[in-house]
Length: 550
Image 1 (cartoon, helix red, strand yellow):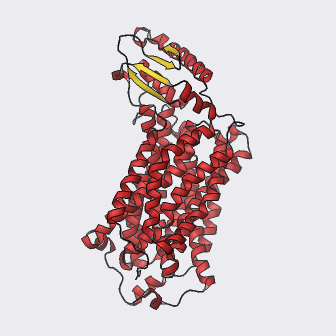
Image 2 (cartoon, helix red, strand yellow):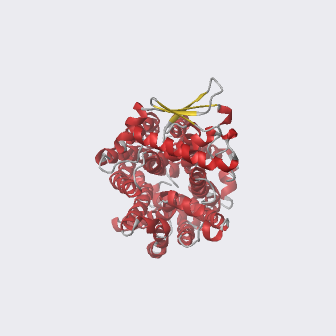
Image 3 (cartoon, helix red, strand yellow):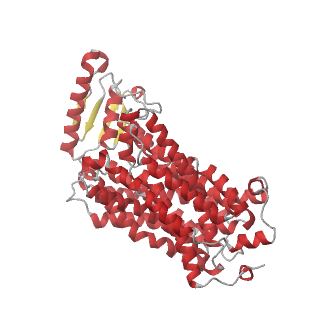
């Protein structure tokens, strides 16, 4: 039976309701999920204040990633329910779980109030969010695709990732308005909780809208014909005929989409704040403007995939991202903080020390302060300062030192300093190092010097790459799998890919930056993944445009 034979094409109002209600609910749900990522720097200070600053920020990013790590479990749980009991009621359940978990993040006391319980509760709520979002996206694109005509499936399903991007935009707008409405200190102490609490209102609106929707006509047809799967998980993942497309979807489609999207959004946000040292309000407003300009491109590329095919559109996004990420972020640093970019070129920072005394600037158990050796003291300070540096081994027995342009600053020999004097010696060295960095131009971005139009243009270019790889992939995933197992089969690779490759991207990238000293080194992770996905997709992903989805 063809798609057209299933039911008459929906009326315009019906199609508008289906796409609009599904997309709006998705936007609110991703607003909830993205709030944490947009406020990771603030959350780190409240929930991970028991460790050093660099480790605390990486911990906050790791907690952000936890929400992605459990997404595959959510995909299995809610995907199975969606294939057994229906699309509509399953993504209503995910909406309720997401909304309440987000509200509760806004009321949990910080580390200073309840100690270790604070980050543990936070991680637990992130797990609930991850489970919910793991079932939401697959349900939404499946529901919309099963209402759409074959010739408009790419266009209609593209509204779901477009409004997911709009969810990030909404979170940034709410944060920006909240920041602007109160002193910066008040926002840092308690104002950051307001966007989370607002989720209670958005949850009520989303439920009211989605309750107006009926069940998918494809699912209704299968139910009437007794053609639904009795064991969708086993059928999806234990039969090679279906499992091979799950693997193709994961490594030839979703992995690249995930790294491109999260590099263009959250990594760009953190890069502007921590590396380019642009203030939080300016960073948020510039990214919000770029998102507003770029979100419609997702729909445009979805429409284009209805004309030229899914595969050419998504693969072009991966290839261009692999080629352009490094130069685009280089241009972003120059546009956002020209003084810092000039200093990086004119006065490069070199650390000379016994490299055996240098450790990775990340402590997974929060026990180290990185002040046992001079090399650690130097690198810990440079990591916090966001200064790019190279490390060279000493060829003699002299003390560790930092070269900034032509200026050389020797670090104190900590082994020869009494324990009671060590803290003061380290602080004095850090003060000299800070003064030298400032004199060389390693400074926070001057608001008057930020080239705002150029920053927005670069961010739009990054987001356009994300739009290209995202706009067509929803329809491609839906069309890869038969209706009886579709919710389960597409949800797992979609969430594994976004969880492992995308969700951990900021934490992996900034750990690499802290360890190497190169502020651009973290970009090699998304570049390599995008390039590998392009190659795998080129040879293994089939073209699905025009397929029946029954």
